[in-house]
Length: 111
Image (cartoon, rainbow, N blue to C red; front, side, top):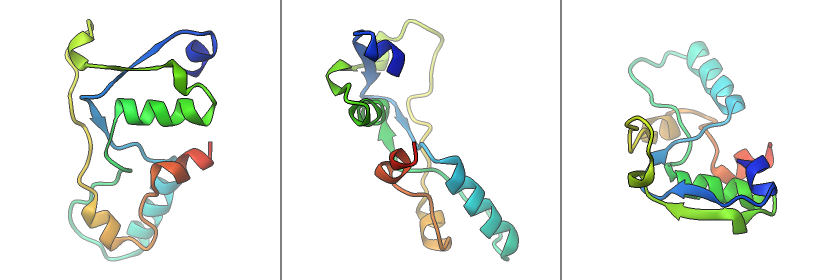
């Protein structure tokens, strides 16, 4: 995406597709905490719920390429079917972990 944007290409980013991006370092920290504790049950571990547009725009903005983002719809996608929403409800992780996954700004600061 960054290479294409830097080359002047407009980047279509879906406003109707949601994800929960998470930094690997946050996953490692959470898994270590869970393994060392006595937690039981199902725990969804992910970052903030964002559209692909919000995520892509944040990455492009960090690199000074925000003008290359174009809001798009999943309806424009010509490939195989895609899930609209693969985000997680991470409320339990946020309330249970000493160091829950961070927000997007903190994740991008590490990049």
